[in-house]
Structures are given as structure tokens and as C-alpha cells.
Length: 85
Image (cartoon, rainbow, N blue to C red; front, side, top):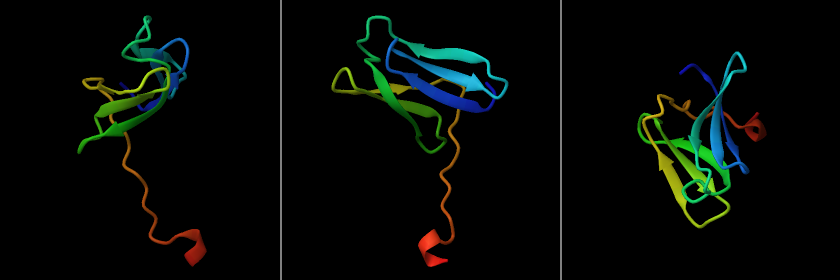
């Protein structure tokens, strides 16, 4: 998959990848709303940032999704904070 953005959809219960050209592809979906239950936030975790974790507002658990062919970008850690300038 190409670079883009990952979007969690509260309803329907799905997670979508939108590439740089605007093409959307569903990368996870749960029509029953049990494993993905109103996903609200997603984050890439792991040493390679290749596992996606989804928070589920409709239930009480986190969902882990791997083997997507996607990787998150590293966090930006500025040398100086604005208050230090």
C-alpha cells in the first residue's frame, strides 16, 4: 500500500486507508460491531509501527490488527519546544 491516512469510522464499524490520490480502501470491517465496535481512534504500535490498535467506543476493548501492509510514521520529537525559543 502507498502512503496515506488511516481513518476510523464510528458507523459503519470499519477502518479505511485513503492514499495520496484520494482512493479509499477498507482495511478492516465488522458489520456485526463486535470486534470493531464503533472504532474511534487508531494508532500504529510496535518496533516497526506495523500493528494497528483501535479503540472501540461501543465496547470495552482494544482491537489489534496486523498484516495490513501499512506502517505508521515515527513520532516527531523536536529539539526545542516553542516555549524554549
